Image (cartoon, rainbow, N blue to C red):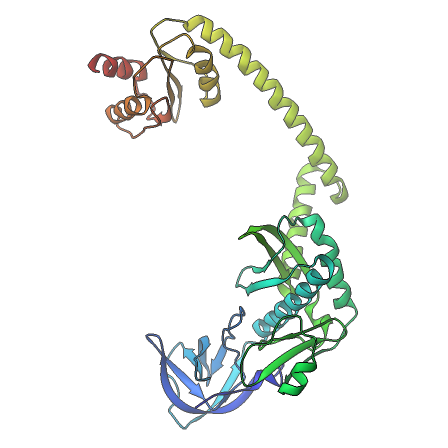
Length: 390
């Protein structure tokens, strides 16, 4: 028996009394089917409602190909034929109404502003995504789109949801083609967007509250846009504002000054890194001159780090057949092995053998290997022993 879905006519209906018509299964889990339900089942990229049946929590809501809505419960279901109170979690419903209506508005604004057609959307539990057929989008290009959506929200336009017959459907200028099904439901944001959809939506755009584009990335030749709307967007912005206030407090400045201070700090950091690089190059030259040899160079560099080891090795491999360097620290020994031209030693195999002898693991490419040995490992002795053995 097909379930009558009450949310189609009234997305604000959160409670009703319904009759249990069947005990069924969804996959390997038992479910309850009602003659009618206010619960929206997961479909079309929108998550299902939650709530309770007769006081028993509803953990999931799904719909099968026959139109039966399955309510999966956290406990025993009411008997077949029983009347039961069905109550939807209102906060979750309102969140999904805002997200779905916001997605419609965003898809329309993208089409109007950038000629970007929506290919798919997903209103997830922690993030919403929308995939479009235009590549190389960035946040700067999406700011006017975000502004256009929020203007429509501020205008408090009516949102209408209804089923249409074939004659009316043929006359409608839909944003995307209607599905091939007996009854087609369309959702209209007055004067802005008209599209087929079976989800739950706001009844005025002001109920979306606001829409925030969080990011964009390349995806399958197009772009994937991440966004939030409604209560989730509000919570996100409040959280970000809290972090900004905390950052300002730590920097001992006003919130508007944070960006300038961060930029200045970034410039100082870049200059410091450049200076450190120059000093590292000078130090590497000094170590290379000290360690220069025609054969193998095996040495420990006190106070070194992986970057210094790499810089020293780069200056030695043109002259030495093999370079094996270590930088001991309190929490382990950074090591690097590189070979010069004409050497047949496999650096990866050598480091693997040394690491195994030291009680650790390691490896790398034939011409270059880097890793970390346990603290206190006698790298020079271990390398020398392996070279003699080889």
